[in-house]
Length: 267
Image (cartoon, rainbow, N blue to C red; front, side, top):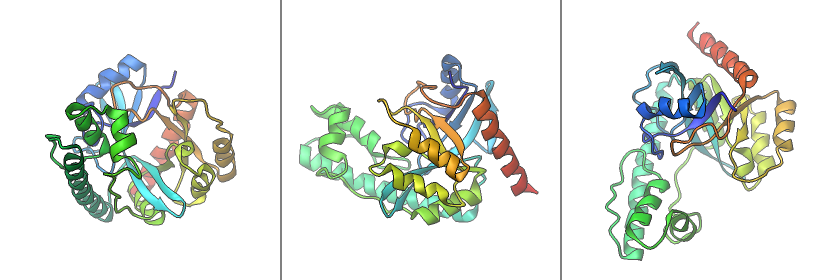
């Protein structure tokens, strides 16, 4: 069983849990450490890079999607102490999210002749819209993505994302550890893993709930080749934690690096 789940979402982005509900979910899963990694949003209730919440160690993190030459990838930042440049970029991304969400909602309502009863506000993502589609039409959640709002679907709208170089640099300036998320989810995992050669990337998500059997040897090779930390998490958008994460030894290495990086920034 993992002791640290370092990839968890709340209602601050597209998760279903309030932050106050995370400790109970962690205790149920036997998890001692949780990283809150909402999409392009800092959690307003987390003022410090790390904190204790009802006996659970909480790492303030963030998940940032970036553009690369071979497609989009997600980066995870841990121990956030945001610079003004990072805050400015997050504000820009939230405005883009709101505009994109409004455009998708308008398209869905026109195409499916329905009323989603959903407003485009900060933190909105396609999961919110897929849930609204499932509540308002004959499509279920998965069908909404597959047929209506997923990539290349009729109501898909692209986002205006930072480049990998800019996103990774902003995270490195604001976070103690930067990790490449779920490397085997991408269409070209090898190209994604090659990004970890960047001096701005410290780690790769070694443990992840892909929902299927995967060959993790490319991830292991990248860890060895580039001297990376292993991170891991369930990518929970619900209240079930611990589907993937770090064991005691792996978390010890992560915590040591995070603590050292934060101490260096403050010195």
